[in-house]
Length: 605
Image (cartoon, rainbow, N blue to C red; front, top):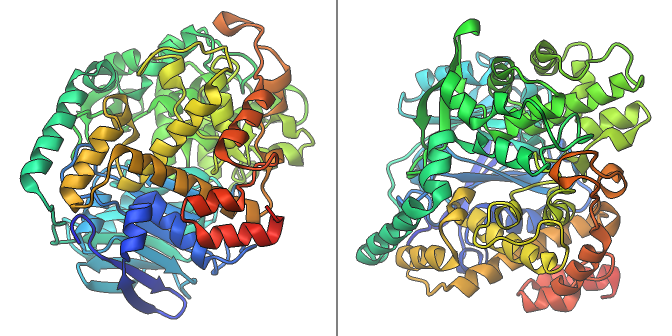
């Protein structure tokens, strides 16, 4: 094989059994790697109804065929599992350098099953795989964990680990690699913690084979030229990081403020990318094989703290969503999320939910909007499992339900929404509702066309045509997550760029249409997994507030989300039933024969 390493590693922590099997041609060509490969394995191996925090759940780490080749933005990896937060099939991916070193150990994927009897970590050095005691590092934050693991293995090793939050199976915990990069969403850290697995250290010497080096060099050059010319990847992200979006989204009235009660934050500039650059930036930071370098190394002199970030989603979730304008407090909350191993979106959004509950009298003694030190203190309480932190640790939906007001949770399928109010960006509403993993802007970044005009500007308030564009972006994004590349590459690159890179590396005649079909296959397989777990149209919805309560001010004033007409069209174009279940014929056309048989037997469609 070219591109792929050709084998999959399996570790049963309960039996301490290590085995491997080949990656099949069918798996590689139908699902590529990363997200797609993990979804295929999970669908095939995980029985219906498995408790996400039980030993029976599987945790899969997967690289893609472009990982480690030096292709632009190819320094990522995926984590796939069943989410304890949402109950859906779930993938989360991360940048940095861990993914490349994992691929260089000679494996395309790692399947972790069972539960270790005692706290453990994995040390993978090429074909050598050890299960080691984690007694010394259990209870440590992610930074200390990485330092200790590297001292016990190799200083060049790359480490992915959980912090105290993951150990305690906090439902909004993450897996952190390279200290500052996170597979953040859906509670993947809790799944790792449920397996008594503290860390994975990797170091490899195997370079993936490139079939046509000359063609690859040309394809990479063309892709890099596109990245260097696009205004988002050339100027905006390198100069101001992802938080460059704060003022842009606020100006159109779609920056969710005070737990989505408003769409405009008067103090947005205080937490913007421009202000981050002016006040706390030390230098730009790039992931492996990336020229964009959107990461920010920052410092807070008043707190004697250094770290990376905050990113757009963090300055939104701890800033505007909580009514906080204190950039230093927001940055500190972000640092703490990385150290405890917490998803910054869900953590900030859950705190915002608690603030609304408190101000409405449903959470006596709770935090209030605008309290900067409260966000810092509450992150610590969540990470340490103390006081009200234990309630917040379960995410906003469970918190709001416990206090009798589930409508205060701004989530879809239990996953907290990111920082774009769909009342001001209608297509994002459909993208949130139909995302297989719950509310997510990265399944289909409709903001690109509806706000940024990339590749063309479309009316953000209209619903016509949004279903077809959402489907296209969902399919393309699923393929990109399976290569595995950074989503920011989509601002500059198109499916032809990706296909040309993939052809050169693998010597398989992938075309742009093939990648779109692969993405469609992956999306439908995820949907079938969710359908067998009981998910349908009822879960493809949005918080009632977004459907019924217009925004009170700003440039999206008096707008609600017109979801149902878009959803009907979306199901029809997908070839799904009116309840959102893929039909057997649709699945068969996508070569998903096992999934088609399951659907036909269960739903008679």
